Length: 95
Ligand SMILES: [Zn+2]
Image (cartoon, rainbow, N blue to C red; front, side, top):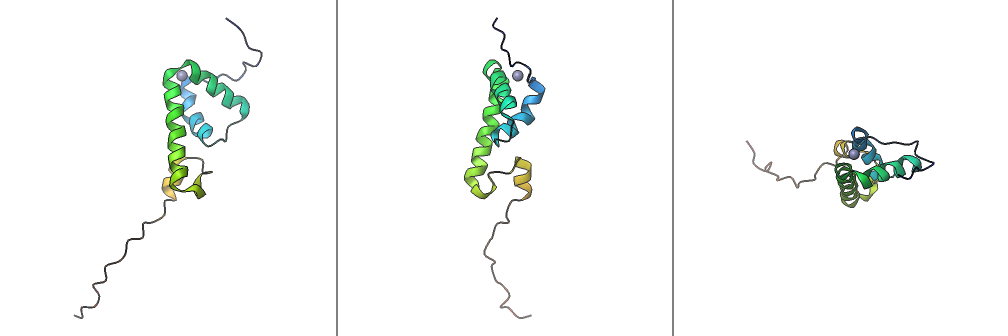
């Protein structure tokens, strides 16, 4: 067992989910980010969570590069632009 000097930032499994979102958005403190990565390297479940969030964030960024800095998928979903369907004009008929 090799003890590291900077082992103050300990990340638990129940914290990974929200930290993974921030990590994917690159909004995490370097110390916390390294702690998340360290945990993910030893915990397969959390590694899957992190990679899922990173992939999700990449898909969102690819979908709309202007929203790549938004912190969560929920925020993006709330600000989703309306789809501009061409309106079928049936108003020529006079009643
Ligand atoms: Zn874990």
